[in-house]
Amino acid sequence: MKNSPVFLYKVKRSCLSCGPEPGGEEKKGRGNPISVQSFPPELVEHIISFLPVRDVVALGQTCRYFHEVCDAEGVWRRICRRLSPRLREQGSGVRPWKRAAILNYTKGLYFQAFGGRRRCLSKSVAPLLAHGYRRFLPTKDHVFILDYAGTLFFFKNALVSSTFGQIQWKRACRYVVLCRGAKDFASDPRCDTVYRKYLYVLATREQAGVVGTTSSRACDCVEVYLQSSGQRVFKMTFHHSMNFKQIVLVGQETQRALLLLTEEGKIYSLVVNETQLDQPRSYTVQLALRKVSRCLPHLRVACMASNQSSTLYITDQGGVYFEVHTPGVYRDLFGTLQAFDPLDQQMPLALSLPAKILFCALGYNHLGLVDEFGRIFMQGNNRYGQLGTGDKMDRGEPTQVPYLQRPIALWCGLNHSLVLSQGPDFDKELLGCGCGAGGRLPGWPKGSATFVKLHVKVPRCVCSLCSTRECLYMLSSHDIEHQDRMEKMKEIVGWMPLMAAQKDFFWEALDMLQRAAGGVGLPDPPEP
Image (tube, rainbow, N blue to C red; front, side):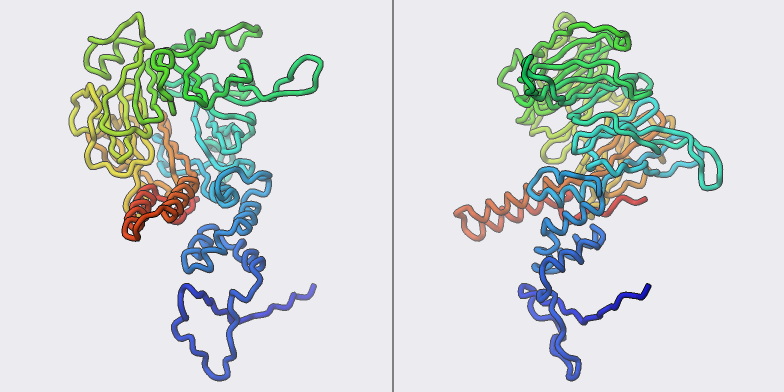
């Protein structure tokens, strides 16, 4: 087969916004160079789509012309189909193809085992079907990951053959699709994965309509799966008028309470006996409005967090409300039993905080809160220094932890805490405090009463983390929707009837917020 002819051109980048190129005067006998702008836009977009994602972003920062070309949806549509050929829909957002491409480019699950001789960061297998990674949950034997398309993946640990022919046990090396149409999922809220026997999945399913008609309508339901095999053992379906977005669990196995958050910010609950779920029988459960929504109907809850004995609610205005169900945990969290009522354990308690809370983490007897200014507040038991305050004195109210900046994720375990933070150069690092037994604080086996930098190499795109008794997990995914919102706000500022100096002030403020959130450019890809 003959080789195809190759034509070589001397191409000159000519951009009106950048001015003439230095040394632009042509030498005699060289001829006139060809400008990139003389090529058809479709051809330029086609050529650029073969570049790596990181190079496309870097090229778009050189001048206005390449910025417009590299930001075109046609380029990102081709890149997305190259990265994820099985992806049928591009998703949602202002720039759906660019968002889908970057989500699939940066997706990854990393883990580092605490025991054994080899203590390095490893990466799990990445499903081609997954549309980015939204959240994950490790169980006793496996890991479950939910993507942005509502597909829940079942990552299995298995015995595999190494490059040297040895048989070794490897984490998250095989995967199957557990279900589709999932909104959220949860399991036993305790830190020890041994108790996570069942997986509760909040999903949307098509249900048959009125008898005698062929119409159907979407209804939310909760499906229960065995984490060991992925077999569905139980299902409960709700009325089509009930639309939920989050599910958390609280309580013991025999009195497992499922808390469901609606799109309107209301909390509903129902109780099941988890020890009877695998028995082939049907029974009716009662769905009731939680007391926090009954007593405080004006509150609109934005998200929830729970452990075995308490639940935390964050409202859309950044307020925090607490439910504590046992006297021991109440004493650890608040330092007294004065206001604890054993006959009314669902009564919500408001926490006094100086600013709006964005996200939180809830351990067994301590908690962490992050406000809109990036400050971290810790509260509860401090026996092992898990609050990071520099001492081992309990705190009965939220206490600010100094010297922590730009927290991205927060995790509270049984007796230690982890913070994922971002530095000025957008490199991320993992900090930890509390008990270091069992290697749970890599590099600090004796633990620490202050947050210290752990000996873990953190990829730039990591956005969430979780720690179990055996392993540290980090989820990598970069969503540009926040950056798109910033660009829209800049555009709105430009439309406002303000003076030039005022517009410059607001634009600079938005740029500072964008840099603080890590929205400049694209982070480095996950390292293999």
